[in-house]
Length: 252
Image 1 (tube, helix red, strand yellow):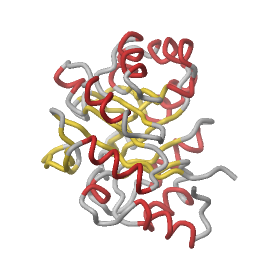
Image 2 (spheres, rainbow, N blue to C red; image 1 turned 90 degrees about the vertical axis):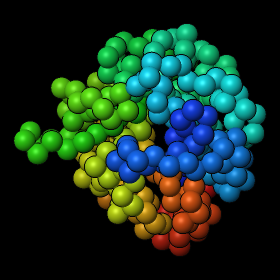
Image 3 (cartoon, one colour; image 1 turned 180 degrees about the horizontal axis):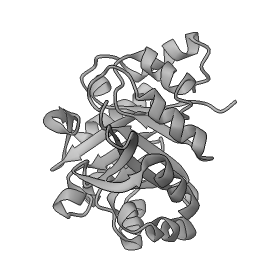
């Protein structure tokens, strides 16, 4: 039985961790290095670090912050934001990341996924998908540039294409649920988890420990990611894992 993973996410802007609601109204949540150390000690299974303004502002991910965070961590560490080439991936992995997360660049150039997977192995390549429901089309669409641009990709179709290109994992964020704390988008998560053969990380909407259990049971996710509820100490990784154990979920 595969162990379910609990993953705190550090959204970083200008060297500080921030958190918003539906990708806007960002507020400060602290220093990335301090938070990384804290989550490592708390028993997080992995950590995701997203330089959320990198693609939008056309900047490279802050390599020096990545180096400082990696120096403090014993757990796997995924970094995304502004990674547009194989050289960018090399730089981030050399700085101490275990995996890179591609979002905008992968949609604009799907062969970048294959390039990275061929060079580093699929296990190092995470494709992050920002999904929003389109009432008119009756399906979820893929958004890029930090949730600012709608694409022609339907989410499940894009997830399948990303796997075909060599992605080893999907980080799936429901923009509709982001920061609302009323639970993950279980329909969306289940649709993608059922369609692909690689692990899916549920993201967007975690408000309490029950939501994690639902992401695993109904959403069929392999891992669940959260930010604000951990950053602002509304609950902790320890408490979530304790609850999941009591519910019979296999966690570390």
